[in-house]
Length: 463
Image (cartoon, rainbow, N blue to C red):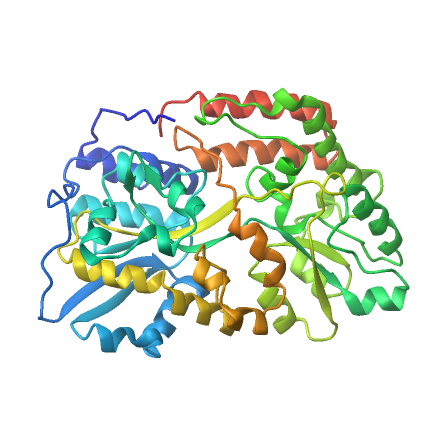
């Protein structure tokens, strides 16, 4: 796998103009552009800085979000795992940015351009877009020398899939903070199904069995099933496509290969098309955006695919009925269950003057106890740590996670978009898929159009 570095460096004026563009453009430029002149130089120390006995402030940049900044602040306030006691010289300061990547990424890169970036940064990768920040943009540094200096065994702490996706050419630029299987489970309304006289779904169902069941559960203004969180097909629906035997791009991330399995790809698209347009067991977006949590909570939708974090949130939110959880279907009985890894990550900046202390904070953010407590208390999604998944405290509070443990232990990596235009790729794919669901094109036509339009994105220069 190779990444094509853009040798042209941006001037500071050009860079600052770039980060002031529209939301999507800013996100793509920010995530993928080459290092601007004036950006902090990469560390040349090759290891950790000497520890200090003086009080050190570690500035950590992140979005303002319940499972990111709010949980980390809770961890600091309650001194989870005795972090403050173990590190009395470290004062972690969270610098939060409201919004999402369109607001966060340009802000971080403006700090980098101005030389005011702190010590730790957060990132939500999309098809390895975060690697650009280490290889092309010079924002984050290799953490392996810091781990070696600290005696921290990366391989002993994280599943290999999570290490691989955060590493390029032998350098690991990021550490997993949230790392979870993408939309691996379906939530369903146990109470309402019993009232309707409809059997509950089971973990071994096929797609055909789910569709047949959804027809029985669709009645009296109630929809039986909706793809829900997997409806963003290129990304959150990628495990669904893999279950049909469809990979989207080649190993290098430069070539669309959906038509290598054209029959299977069309069948996967036809399945979703039929749920809405033929069987009519799923709500149609023709009346506007579909709000699955609202429909599910209002008991107008019996089942929907969900992200793992909803395993905690739904029962705490919807208390008028009992909720069950079942694994997403497979194509045929006994098929291997496919998956894909989703992550939020943190890295240490190249401008940090306190890398030893920053590494201590980083490994605490991503440590066992912080993440066990996050699951037990219902504050964030899981992490790709074997010791967290082996901790029985998690299953006592969240027994559904027993279904996900085998998936996580053999998690498949996200695919690669080599020119770092992962978000643009996903949006291009989704626009065609949405048009198909609206009935504006047939599945075979959509398959060919996805191949054509997404290949055009892959053919662009590195963003």
